Image (cartoon, rainbow, N blue to C red; front, side, top):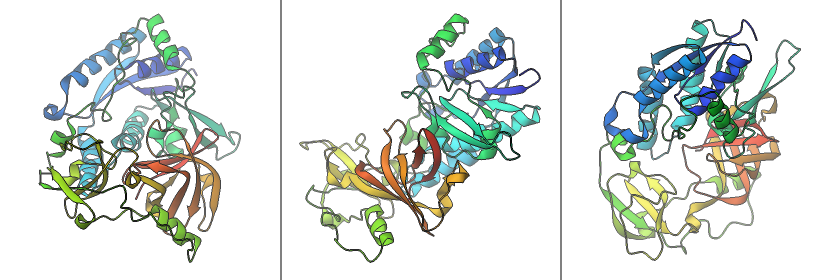
Length: 399
């Protein structure tokens, strides 16, 4: 690949370090770029997010590999596109996925544009996923986002909002490797990141104290915690007849609507907008035979609805809905038209969840996804991604 220039997002971790090494070995001209996206240390758990150490490690890797290196400050773009979005979603009682948005808006948009301004042919990251190309001999090639070879580390879900233009300019050098192989390569090359622990937490920030983070804009506001018994469920008796297929899909995808009259008050919370469906920790309510889980969040009434045990029926749902404006097709050749259904997809609604068999139905309003098995804690604001034979076909934010 002599003459081809690649800008690698060097994060200071082992994966991006090895990605840069492999690209250089293939003959690319490699430039390492470290992105500084956060300045507020007050909500960061410092021991878990040593960004200065990460930046230094990225620089040392670049020196070891003999590649150019620089740091860019994208904190303004990160705040506008990711942090403000997070606040708005939590305020609505939804739970955003900042890592997916970070990839779509920062790594493969702002970062990509910076790379292209440096006359790069591609950008590269240390994601565990793969890219394939079909129709490569034609004017309009089709790019396929494929799951990583290491099923335990597959990160294709985090890239579920990428489009064809972004994929055309992207390389995933370690996507065909297992994690232990990546560490062995790093160790053999004497890279300082070889034994470094994987980073966790928000994209480019690391672990944060989420309540502290949210309280920057979302102020505490006490409200009731209402416990819903297992016997109570709006869906405990499903109709046997529906006027249409769309009515059936809508019924099973509808959010459970609880009121304070449906249960008993068992405690107080400091703000419904700090919680998410399926959450167990942070409720500060004891004395129940089984742990309490959040069943629903009502920010308009500032009320949390909870139930005992992870098998509580209020946690489970058969279907979900994605509005048309939120539906995204990574592979546009598979895009469904209004009235179409597809039964060949497997879906996940969170990272590392096992793929679930499901049927997709396309309406004017959006996509209904009907699962073969009940799903726990389908969370508004999170992303559902659908796959076919290892390829990520499309995704969308859950309504």
